[in-house]
Length: 138
Picture 1: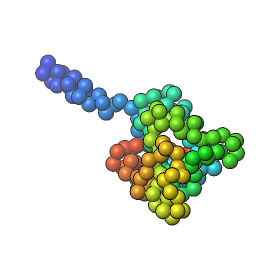
Picture 2 (picture 1 turned 30 degrees about the vertical axis):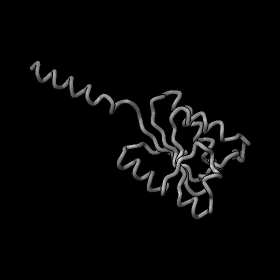
Picture 3 (picture 1 turned 90 degrees about the horizontal axis):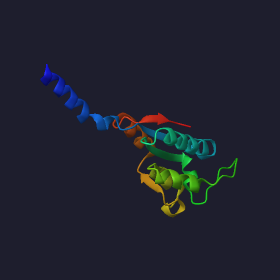
Picture 4 (picture 1 turned 90 degrees about the vertical axis):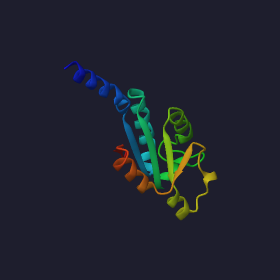
């Protein structure tokens, strides 16, 4: 009985890193409607659960909030400082390269915090199906 209990305790502690935190992918495809709300949701999430791993995937019109100097069209809030603060807290911002190609957008147009993914929708699918990320669309 002691051996079984010891084995269970060892298995529990060996799997402890799996309980280290949640993983969430935020999907942005319309910056005017989703970006500011999404950035605020992410800030709130990290304030409550700072060990959450978050990836923001932007495609279509959603990539526009990651342009250098971009502002929210309703409040005129600049996105850059919000993005920088979240990046400092470990949030990853990924831009769809298919969107970049279709819209002829060079990497120089984006904030330095931006990373790139070949396909936004494929990336979201992989994060959900293979890496078990929760899905959020603000």
